[in-house]
Length: 187
Image (cartoon, rainbow, N blue to C red):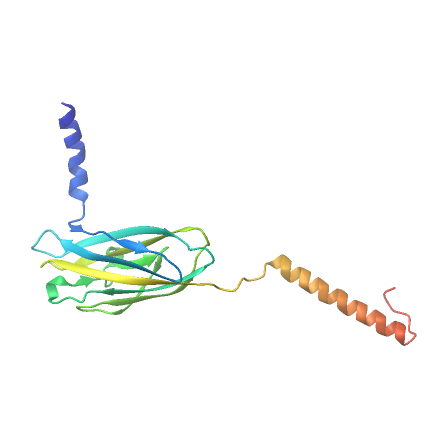
């Protein structure tokens, strides 16, 4: 009886499973990391099928920017290509919700990500979704290039700097007035 209940509960989950097998690997080593899936395959054999790979990584120490590239293929035949084109939310490559810009499509596709800010030590999410051709396997690989953006001063730092400049100006004016024998206005 228990086996029937477990089987009945698992059946809907099996129907929702993606028909493509995908195993993404990532190496977020700075300053240039990599990610890839060399074995995106379609199990249906009759129609194109979708896949979605998700992985996470921690921002490398000392870095707060990342840019990226992605290349699919090269496919030897049209049935072995991966399609990342604009099919709504089903396809595309995102890092922390920022979409890669698809530059070339066809048997080999190419996409880039302009540098975006990362929080040092934070967990980041890379999602690669697409369609793989019916006749077998496709592949993709990409790079993540990490960098450092100069720190932007906080408002309190700006206020302290302006206060210091004002105080310096006041002291210089007072010193000039004393040298010329004038009584400063603000004594």
